[in-house]
Image 1 (cartoon, rainbow, N blue to C red):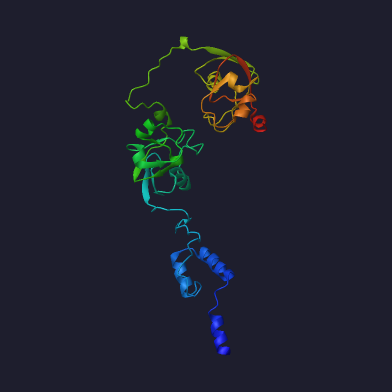
Image 2: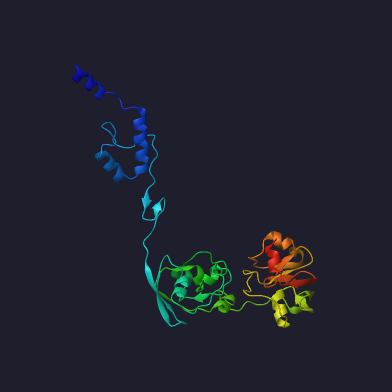
Length: 287
């Protein structure tokens, strides 16, 4: 009789809590290989062959971790012609990073694809040679013409690269001709700018940046990147900056800072007469 009772007990259904525990464990195990192992260990039980229909489906994983994919990484030989060196650069590395790691003397500044200081040339269409991530400085035409930004570029093949080509890129036109000026000096309005710290007044055309005018007139003004990135040239005008200055490439000041009267002389051109106070970067940062 006892033997019969034990047999009946053995046939009792598995308590719901045990099913739940198994299901939670299955979800944690994830992959098909681990599920197979779980089956061998008896975790699944005699009546289960895999996750239940309402269990979550495991996300396929790759070497890069759950939910990510990683392609094959290739390494290419990059010949730096100006520096007289060749470096091995992987397809998932940035050209500038490797150059700096190798101690090469290459021009760069912002490292974000904005300032253009690192502009270089490759032997053909830039899209054939590098993969850019954030090449804001160069146009599609300039890249197609062989200009690339090492600070945001990874290689796609072996090639030679020539650094120090920012001016060439700036003057580049797809048809090879210089861009014709459509306006004359007489057509451009000029404004009187009073530099309070320097004790000088200059006439600045609407087509010229405030910084260029200051440097042309030998004024001692603070600046560094000349591309609106570093904020070193931050100055203050008597009202909302947007009423006094037209910015072209401001990457440092927020809209709130500009409206509070802060401007960047390196990328700011005048829209009217006004006085300007330089050396106020810290004040702007506090806004």
